[in-house]
Amino acid sequence: RSELGWRYWPPIAIEVSDVGIAVKGADELARFGQMQVDVDLLPLLTQGHIIDINRLQLTGGRILVTESEATPSTGTDTSASETIPLPTVHELSIRQVSVTVPAADLEVSVTDFSTNRLAADSPFDFTWRGDARFGETLQLTADATGRLLYFSETGRIRFDDLLVDRKS
Image (tube, rainbow, N blue to C red; front, side, top):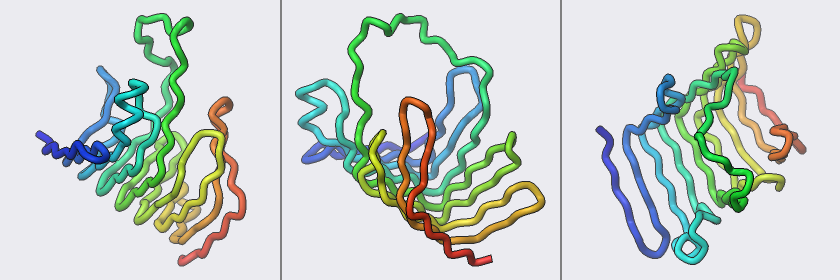
């Protein structure tokens, strides 16, 4: 039931409206009113996988973060396969998206989040505007800027130079 639009030159651009994301046989993890992805064509053609994502935009949606006791198996052995590098996202923009983490009693409403050059194991600058609710005890409306570093091996995140302007 989604609309799909695309452009094929110079970058490949795909735009999808009303898109849902789910693991087969599980509840929906996310739904977005609009998602747009621009990727470089040349690395895709010459190396067979995406190396650079020029822009990823997510607008008007919700994300449900749940914990899983088991990781689904694909039924294939990947131990001997070639390691494909993680892509670099040169521009990430998220607008009007809510994130819910039921296990932590956390709800975050992202009015605007943007970053440049998002890559694993490399720091990146970000800006965020939105609201957060932690259980019944803390509600926060704020703007934030800073530098974030994601460590792919451990799955940990570190913030540097974090500035928060609390609105309420």
